[in-house]
Structure formats: C-alpha cells, structure tokens
Length: 80
Ligand SMILES: [Zn+2]
Image 1 (tube, protein in one colour):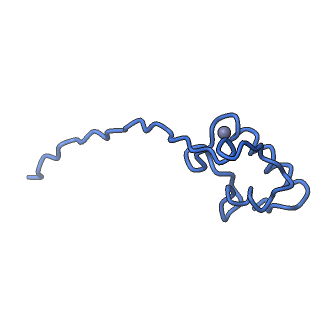
Image 2 (cartoon, rainbow, N blue to C red):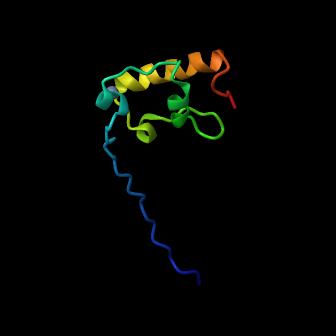
C-alpha cells in the first residue's frame, strides 16, 4: 500500500516590490546616450530587466525600456 501523500498547497506570498530607483535618487531620466549605464539593466541574453529586478519605479521603468529600445535601434545595446 502506498502511503497517502498529503497535498501541500503552495503558499504564494505576494511580495511588495521594493523600490529603490536609481533614477529617482540621482534625479535624472533614462537616456539612450548613456547606454553603458543602461546595459546594467539588460541581461546576458539581451532581455530588459523587469521592475522586480531593476527596482525602478513605474515611471522610470517605462522610460528606461524606451531608452533601451532606442539604444538597440542605434546598435549601442545588443538585441540578443
Ligand atoms: Zn524613479
């Protein structure tokens, strides 16, 4: 007889995103010309870091993604 295995419910905790926005601290806006700084938020495979990873606020995360996309278009940051 097989032992009855208790079903364990996965407890999913809702983690509040800690905001420590680098752009708010320095009071600057993300700029595609500062691609060396922006490349910090791009993973090895060329993916843009999400808000949980980057720690940016919503406003600067939006601006950062457009800045990264602009830099990609100019060939400053790799696509993949
Ligand atoms: Zn911010």
